[in-house]
Length: 142
Image (cartoon, rainbow, N blue to C red; front, side):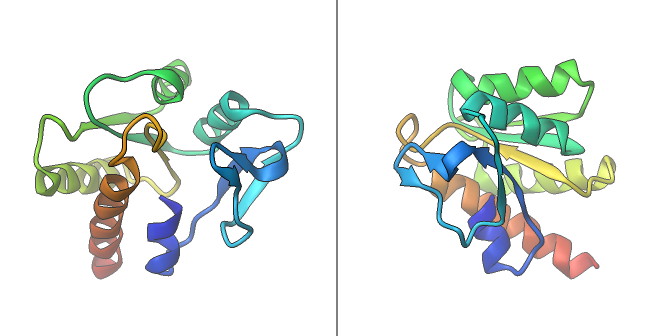
């Protein structure tokens, strides 16, 4: 989650579609993302999975669309995947599971995935809360 990383001065990056496009316009240049030439959302999703050690999926309810594609891409590449269904567990439990997953797999480059805000209104706020707590815990352990 880029905003959480930037807020905590934590290294982040990744890929975005050509033209830095997003569902609500253009991705701000404050986000250290590389444009994937000629790519669309699904190409970006695949490239982010390829360039990470594992994928962490934050969602509520059913996996679908690009979120499901992230899981399928990671499994096809035999990379660890953690599914965090916030409809089924408390955020404090989710944070603990994410932190344990990162530590157990000795992850350095994580791909955070989840539904778009237009698909789940609490996507951004939920993912950011989890990411902020996890990053804070990771920084305190270093």
